[in-house]
Image (cartoon, rainbow, N blue to C red; front, side, top):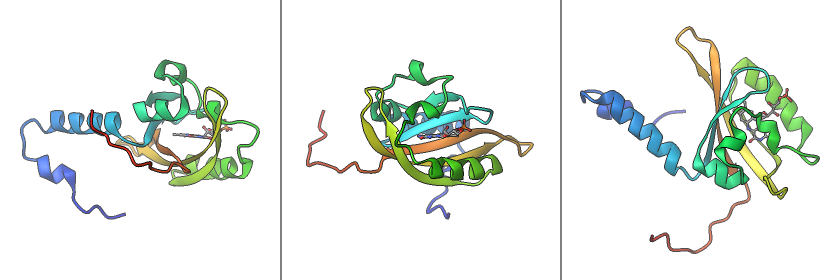
Length: 147
Ligand SMILES: Cc1cc2nc3c(=O)[nH]c(=O)nc-3n(C[C@H](O)[C@H](O)[C@H](O)COP(=O)(O)O)c2cc1C
């Protein structure tokens, strides 16, 4: 995938590059319309971070998700074929993109669409996974977003 602009280049020469990158990432996560989840790359994929959009999407608070597996979202109608493909692709460091029925905290169903991206350390080992998630059937309604 090609970037239209490289945002690292924009701020590279600024002496507070690190702080700017931190704020940029924090704001992107905090204000994103998409859910963002970070898990450890070990058995059960324990969650270490969820953003506000993910909590809004699923109805869980962060404290109810940290340390748990994303399987908490699955239930009887979650397509096992999609999970099988995930189990083949994710441990190999491949990009996963799929959708399956998930369940919110209140038990209501929705079609989750998500991508999983491997995060490597400088030795090249996968230490974490980043997921971007959304309700695949969400449709915008005419609405003013003024505060
Ligand atoms: C970063 C990440 C995000 C995930 N997000 C979801 C999700 O939103 N919905 C879902 O049904 N499964 C999700 N999964 C997949 C479940 O964790 C997956 O079914 C499970 O890890 C398979 O592992 P198992 O071998 O314990 O069954 C995610 C996995 C990872 C690594």
